[in-house]
Image (cartoon, rainbow, N blue to C red):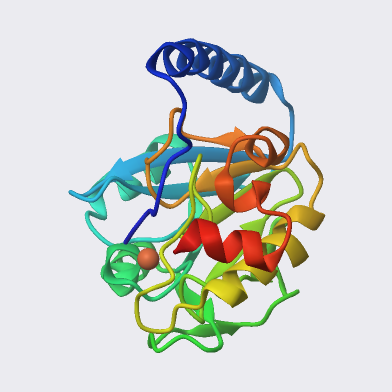
Length: 240
Ligand SMILES: [Fe+2]
């Protein structure tokens, strides 16, 4: 669940921007296919709410994690089979049903463990802390606790890719008016945690709300109203 706002630009510049962004995304995909070693990332769109889920696989060992599972499990299991991934963890970025309803079902089918932040109301096998590393072969997913959309919101970072759940989307950001939400906490999560990452970090959001399915932190910093707000007062004005 949900986005707040989109960057307001003219229809003409939006069309040009869309073409450039789409081109940049295709170049990135080509480069990613050429990258040897590291993590394989498959983005899958599932369910009626534009949700993205991710299969993240260590290329060398084939050990994998799934980020979020709220709707169908079949496309994820089929992709895992196709790519030879062994799913070890199914991780919820936060407790909202569209990200977590089929967590247990998927984990059971894959023989994996479920995981969520330690403050989550979800019943899971592993309760994660901020700063914790989830090992997949020689690769790691770092847990970043980013409360604001919900108290249990986390992002996952593999050193290149940043899975942001509903904390941050392409061009917008997560709602803070639902139970457990806090605009003040979201501001500190964005400025104190996400903006400390390298500008090249590639944001993979929990919903397909943007011009492109993913975008670098550097690009977002110049476009996303949540990142453009440099102080809490400005951020609260954007959120309200
Ligand atoms: Fe949500």
